[in-house]
Picture 1 (tube, helix red, strand yellow):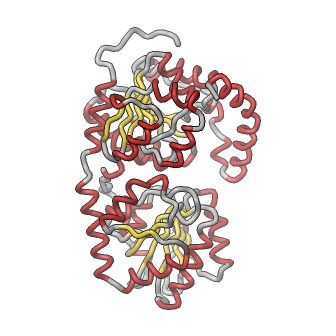
Picture 2 (cartoon, helix red, strand yellow):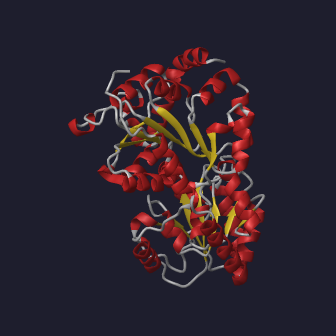
Picture 3 (cartoon, one colour):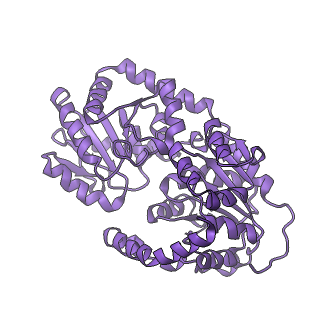
Length: 435
């Protein structure tokens, strides 16, 4: 399949894409808003419009990529405050996180769908000089028309699992030309670079930068948030958190929790579903299983009789981790590839995940080798790991220290990535021209 065939298929799929958007809007009303941006129509202020032809475009798909991009955005703001930044996402939760982290300091809109007309409209509005794609969200038209318009293209914090590599290899006439157009791919680890090479990427295009996700700076407000949450929990009791759980995973977590309570009856579970639209259904699931639930949004006290604190808030994940003793990171007992395992490690928690880890494969391998993370096969193994962790303070200390040490030893990726970005942003900008 080449790009022409891809465009025909994408055009034919548009009605189904719109129907899917409508269906998602039923569950999450935020999907019903700002549709124009998804098709490339953006409204800029007069000041933003004056930056046409100078923009540095950073694309971060959802919450995970937005969090990964945050240190880079702040670093660029520090080193080159003159460069206007537009940060795009594709999900409402990612959008909310960008606005929460940066406010008006960056321009934020949804990324256009990868249809030629939508992409051309978006590029005509901004005329970016550089496109920085976080991790591996590769869209043929976005890359092609960005290059055609004179922009350079970088993949930052790039990861490529074996599964994704096999997917790209199935369509060499589409993926090959797209990869050729990328100026630089900053990969997280040598294995990622090797997979790109197998797809035909030249050695000169690849730089091993390490993962920006190791650059975790705990916010100054964390201590205050931690105190606020601790005040809600009435008694001293062991706490474990199941973070960023996905549909079908909460059932497994609750089964593990029930098993844990047989040996540790005062254990408290903090359960934080990945998507806000599922908070209500997860609460009903917990209540239906006979657990007493307190929602974070109610600000109610978590008494000795409370089994579960439901984390139905945004932007407080680090605070939830900070009052926990052990962490299970979701998206891993169902086949969605695991979420950020480094945040709990940064706070010195032992980390447990299921076997689905392709989104964080390299980092999970590094953490497991260092002794900071343990992979559990299923809910029974998860329960056993949590029981052992609660009963063994030395194990918690050893795993927690290993995670902090690994993070400290892997810092530096941010500066290397920032250097690559600034190297590819032109010092002398060309006159503004239409695409």
